[in-house]
Image (cartoon, rainbow, N blue to C red; front, side, top):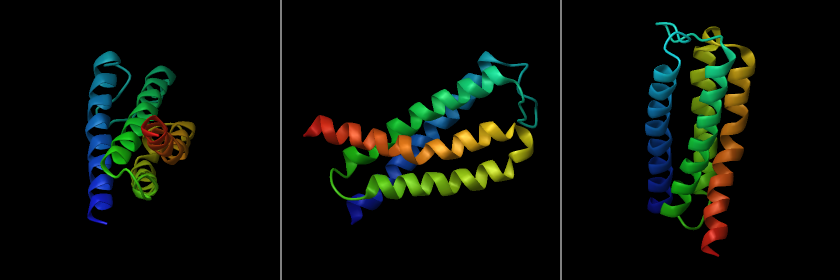
Length: 124
């Protein structure tokens, strides 16, 4: 059980660190698209953010599965990321279009589980 908890924590930290880098990169690429309050209604930076977020979710799931080679840790991580995502996106709903928030939340769990499955299949 300790290994599973560690796997979820490591996966969550990996996702969070990657997301910080993601947002820093997007702000550097599109400096005029994101306002000081974090709001953005331009399609290109939002799509880039989603694409990188999708990749970081796959990576987080893979990292989680590498730490806990068996069990349901990736599922726990997927649920945790989704719950946190709902809270964060809900609090920031006014800063971006609804399609961005919905896409962000809906894809967290499936892509996290995909990353875990990819590592599981490679190990088999």
